[in-house]
Length: 125
Image (cartoon, rainbow, N blue to C red; front, side, top):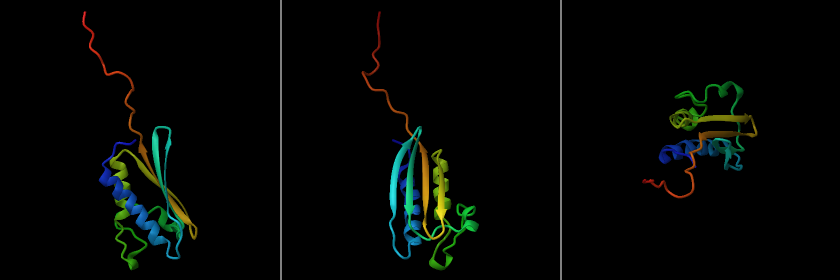
């Protein structure tokens, strides 16, 4: 479990899914996974697309930076995803291989688990 604004997190994941689909011009598989790593919940979006060129990798979270301007890209999606993760005390990171695909990882703090058992009872003397 994580405590998030569900609409914002849906938007962050949708941005990654759309980018992944658009990067797979020759087809491929888009995979979404989630797991717990200690105190964090990690969601992964993996594509088999064209990958992110090394010269673009340090710029992709900048507002209005896009490698898809000829295809209608606005450069807002990844910047928005980055900001949403910051608002939730999380992070976004990626690994990419040109010609093989990209994996984005969204890391969010796990919500504290409520203790099980009887509700607190007041003692009287």
